[in-house]
Image (cartoon, rainbow, N blue to C red; front, side, top):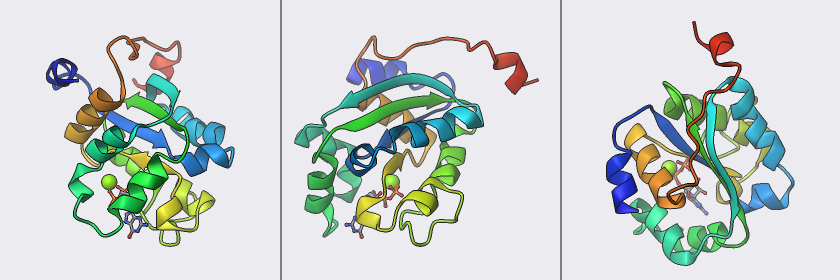
Length: 160
Ligand code: GDP
Ligand code: MG
């Protein structure tokens, strides 16, 4: 993934959003995708994917020392996830707002976690926490050729 990571450091802001295995098992894929779609961000990559252990460990490497890390890796690899790449100015912070607080009991109603989840260990969705991590995570989860650059027909109706 290194060449793609270097190549992707410039360009528009992107966030890596992922429906976690509980979201897939509970039939929430369409609901979660539609929140970002309706908001007006641009979908650039989308796939159902069984995450291998080494990828889960790399994705969450900053949490390696946390006591819940082994359970987190077990959770993320417990079934297929839906990987998404979304683009747009401000998409990282806005997606974090749409997703809500890490603990779903503290997440505001109207947010994905606030509406659809009850526990931190089953909080249905991931969103990148910085533009840099957005780039890093998209390069990590998507291969060359899996990202589409396109202009949706609604573009002039979203931005002046
Ligand atoms: P996020 O950015 O809101 O997803 O939260 P973090 O980056 O802090 O943690 C990543 C993920 O690890 C969370 O979304 C949870 O799935 C999981 N996690 C975080 N804290 C805990 C915890 O205290 N217990 C458990 N079981 N999982 C946790
Ligand atoms: Mg995080």
